[in-house]
Image 1 (cartoon, rainbow, N blue to C red):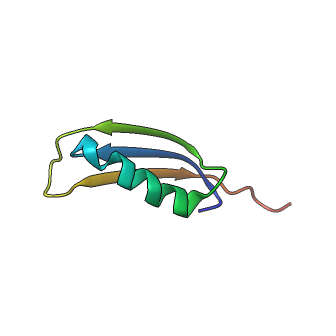
Image 2: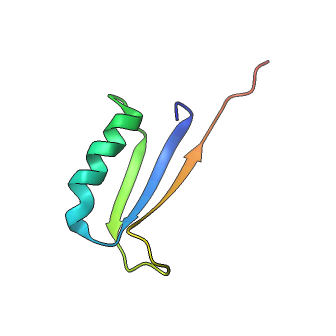
Length: 60
């Protein structure tokens, strides 16, 4: 998770935001990556969808 630079989040129910946000902070701590969070009807039976972009600099 230390290499994640951006997270996109889709929530089925916006009332789940505060619970999601608490868990998000547990994973990313004091310096979380950039994030967008929106409400969306899901294409499958789920409550949340998340995508991440990570960047890891090569040595040398």
